[in-house]
Amino acid sequence: MPRMLDVSEDVRAEIGDEEADRLLAGENAPGSYDCTSCRTPGDSEQERTSTVLFVGEETAVLAFAHATCIPSQVVQVAEDQLQGAVRSITGDESQGPGAGPQQAVLGITSGLVLIDGDLHPALVVEPTAPIARPGTTGYGGDDFLPLLIEQGFQPVSDVNRRPGRLPGWSVLVAMGQLHAVLQPGTGGGSPVAWWQAHQPLQVTDGWRAAANKSQTVLVFAAPVGSIGQQPREDLLREALEKAAAGGRLVAAAMPLAGT
View 1 (cartoon, helix red, strand yellow):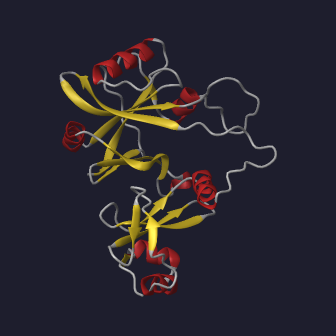
View 2: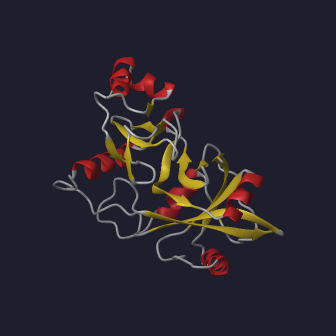
């Protein structure tokens, strides 16, 4: 039975006309699926469904989403993220011999930060564990901030000063939800997700209005244990100022991608 599938021109170009036509005819498309955006069930026989192609350096995964959640598109992601998604889909979570400990997850909090009398939309990123430099083993330190400074983030000594813009990075917001923080691709390629939501995160109307007004989001980052999950923006501000005073905060301004 034909499916109610949307296949964008970008996705068609990646998978080829033959495969795209098979999907539209219902040969290779599932009837029911879990939406890759909101993670709730969908049915391509009953509702419009987007085909979303996740592309890494060596791996590509075709996923499906409610058309009301996200449009059909090609999403560039880091290869290790894509391999992790494949393992979770197939149920193969084993790390294999010689594998390192489970990777830290980047937690993210949205809030408004007052700078020079204006409210700025901000994201605060804090990993759940120390971050080691890629390729190192048996290292007990935390290289999260040095790695970000090498990427162009600036150390913050005063939260009242607006950080500079970081070229090539952006914050992806679609349909009023936070989807990803994007960084430049290797060799000048398409941007890839530095952080990507497993499920799009809701932001407040005030945050979205401020982001649409300035078209810029301030991204703060601190090592594990520096900020924590603060229930109110005044407490978040206090935690940011404390981290800055201790030399444990970096930041960058990024353009808003999406709406």
